[in-house]
Length: 313
Image (tube, rainbow, N blue to C red; front, side, top):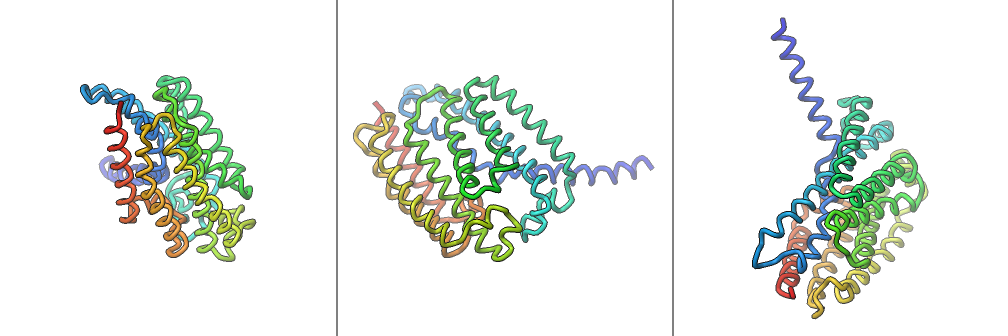
């Protein structure tokens, strides 16, 4: 009988573990790669080509920061899904989420979220007090978004944008390096564009049921969101262009401007996917599934890295 009980308990435990892993949404942790921005754009000062291993400690700190932010975001996703369970059940895709579908108990989700928050914040402050402060600020903003801000028109998308900026700030804080304010502006505008694209796709898919799936959608229309996008998209491009030849930590020969075509194509490709194919609701899927966009990102990374290394000194 004990053996039979064990055989019954094991699948149940495995199912719960799978539900928890699904609930913290590892696929969306790609957003936290922004913490590497500071490391990438200070490669000129951080990487001694005559001694490449000197770069490893900085890479290790940035990677630990990425993991800690991923734990925080996973906790936020669990709390968010507890609050949104009823609305998620009305959504054609979100109703399959662990809490909305009943595969993960809300009480257990909150316990796991609490453990993730406690552990990640403690380690964040041990890693760097300034990094810990940014992580705590990020957590406060995201919890405010989950509980309140996501219900308020405009403040919902600005909150999402702020979360991305804090990721970039955290990357600089953990390495104790200065970053051009232009990079924060570009990050904020780019995130705002993604958030607006998400809202547009939600409106397109939900139709008359939009307000029932997300309260703030009641105040948006596709035409209004399109006007916002028409302002934010060119602003993002202009900000990035200014960044490439005004940031003090970039090569003085302005070679970084060679990366501008990749940004132009990336913006256009994203707008095409949002408007023509209505794929903006899950931007994390676009980044890992759309081949032209992946090639564009890799091209930008390769070009920027080459410029930063070759122009070193």
